[in-house]
Image (cartoon, rainbow, N blue to C red; front, side):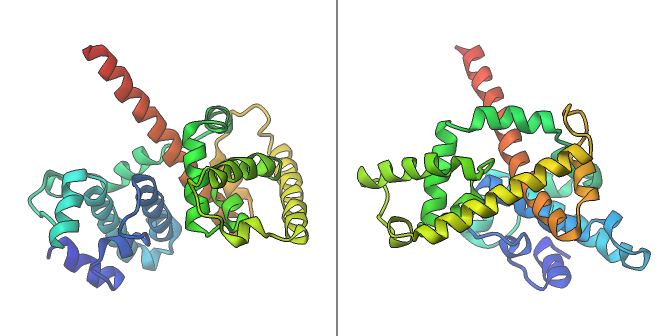
Length: 259
């Protein structure tokens, strides 16, 4: 049975993008985050013993789906022809999909996040992400602030300034949701942000994460289920950016070495 048939049987769709719950034009980071999010839901360690066999099968299929969509040539074949090259090395090789998953989503510490945040904020990459979020959400600042990595209520004025300048330069359309947002809504968002910041700081202190040596997994495990999902989502997004930056740095270094 081919991969598309396996997806249809296990997930009710043969569309690889739908399996990972991402759009067809998703970026590499979005695909990675989608893979992590869906695979966490069926991870064999997170289900009952009775569900383990089915979960293991789904987990392996998800690994193959990600392997296809994260490999440029394989994804191009799928996008253009709607088929999967079953003879491709990414599918033929006898891969330990559990080990593959753990290598992709290696633990990230609080120190890693702080280092990433320091480099990310104010960078061209952050500016591009802010503009993309503005377009994706039609100027809705609530969703923009939720979407942009590492952003807090204290970053809103800076983010607004970036968007305002881009609108003035006609790089972005002037969405009413942004240009005419009410003061009451801005104040409500600020109150939510301040409350969440206090809760996060209290949790960090309670769990002894000041020195940055503990894994975020500790925090995830001790949070309530609804908050755990939010942290999983943030962690996946941060990891995708953090690892992506590392790979870019390696490529740049390699190019310099060739000159």
